[in-house]
Amino acid sequence: MNKQPEIQDVGPEIQEAQAKAKVCRDNYEGIEEMREAGETYLPKNPRETDKDYNLRLGLTDYFPALQHAVHAYIGKPLGSPIVVDGAPGEVEATLDNVDLAGNDLDMWARQSLTCGIVDGVTFAVADYPVVPAGSTLAQERALGARPYLVHVPLENVVDIHYAMVGGAQKVVHFRYKECASVQDGRWGSKKVERIRVLEPGLVEVWEAQQGVDGKTTWVLLADLSGPVSVPEVPVAKFSAMNEDEPPLTELAWLNVRHWQSKSEQNHILHVARVPLLAADEDTRQDQTAAIEIGVKGLITGFTGLKYVEIEGKAIEAGRTDIMDTEDRMRRVAGQMLVTESGQKSATEAALEGGEGSSQLRAWVGNFQSFLNECLRLLALWVGQKEGGHSHVDMEWDEVQVGADLITALSTMREKGQVPSEVLFFNMQKANMIPPDMDFEEFQARLDMEGPQALPGVTPFKKVAAGA
Image (cartoon, rainbow, N blue to C red; front, top):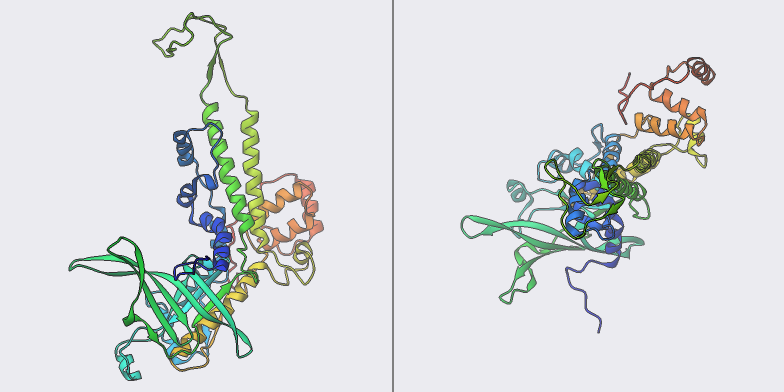
């Protein structure tokens, strides 16, 4: 007999999305999460003891490439305040504290966009405080009741169902986990797990409670549940890509490869720094006896004693592997910012002035639509059909991505993977070459002066207006 689904059971589509997002989420959370994952990302070597493995795991440092890339991406569209126009007064009044937790729309949007890029998909719920039944609008305002937004990251979603309503696909069921703090006795408080269920015109809140037998049961909280005035499920969904795929999966696995390679390099460096004492032959009568080595010890019974050191080839190979992985991570991260014009390659688009749309610009366009839907849902709670329109900064210079891309392009040029014109164009966009210098002059200067160190620039720095 098939087990009937229960309220806490995560739906199959959400399970799949959470599984796909895990490597990106773990990398974004950083070193503690990577260490907690243990052998998932850092396998144990054959015959390696738990003690030795845990020591290696604890000593391996972590380079947060994915985290740095996400912060750089977020800084471009959200480097300027979000502009909202056409919003009803009741909606506009919520934007300075849009989540009732002290975050204005810009801060709330930063968190939501970050989760959307890391996980591939994220959600928002427009909610309204519980007010006494039969309250008038004036009474609700006197209580300070007004709509607000709740960000629901993918990891908190339990399930979502869709159906055709009025010729369009609409959300008809959404439930998610939340954590509430409740009073525990006269002085204390405790955290309780709840699941909030949203359906058209209905909200239910269920709480996990321990029974006398020690088993967890889910109890409906009647005082927090009941019909609501909004006739639809007030949830908005942001997908960075149309397929709900995490867009940074390739970068995440490269980050894992870097973590593994760095661990191996640290281990071989530790071994290489301690010379090994070797002998050609053990002539002792008792070859199982302990060997004392030290400034006060005398080693006897061995012939051909000598110290052996590891050759540097393995160390250099490890160093090269780390550098190559870092180079690939820079290229993958930079690809999200390179523009494409129509069906032209990124190289052609760069040569023609960067007109077109980058992957980041596509993500931000989807996010702006998500914010507009959030505004509409806020407006529904106050009896308005329109919530206004948000305007996210889309005027950043997409080709200007700073030193990381320049470094990657320089390496690619040395390997013959891109033409010199691409490097020249991006260096000019990064203000590393005078804007009036053409490619022929640039090449002639290189031929005359020979190799020169490139001046540093701040990675992903946005050019100020009028600069």
